[in-house]
Image (cartoon, rainbow, N blue to C red):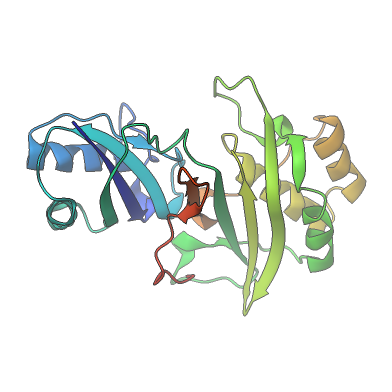
Length: 260
């Protein structure tokens, strides 16, 4: 039996998320259906990140076990020929049996895109914030985030996770023309955590809450203020990193991928 690793790009606009749900299109469901059409097998397709409704991915990683002998390049072409236009298989490769797209990951990187200028074209890939934003306050908040913290306050309810500590390697805001971009890399993420962080930082930057309150949320789990969760449309899973036996990092990001 082979273990196949897929690197996947998708537009999350018209999906209920990565994971199969009782009703609605899911990315996982569409790919499983395509694999079954090609191989005849109902595989267990495991994704590195269970992205939520409306969230996009440039480099989602998934793996599945199969008895099929179809070469990976042919499998990639076959999948792309029948998958809907909002999903693309970037690469397919054989990997060791021990590889698990979620548990083998060293770290994941997300980007969140914001604009303060209303747009019609591209509105499904960016959050239009109508408030006046203090960029310096955004940067001040972001500098507090790296390190090991309990992020339960920023996560959405509804998951069975009992460990809320994540080790954030990088968190920063950037400007790019009319866009404001938040980049965050961590060993793991909680359900809704990035969107909760973005929403809370925007609340600070528009003057709804003080930065001292944000600090208390981050360092003391202060939860007496209801934070705004940013919408899914602006969030992109950018990269998932893995290690070989020599601990050399492998990136899921193809060289020709560019920012939106």
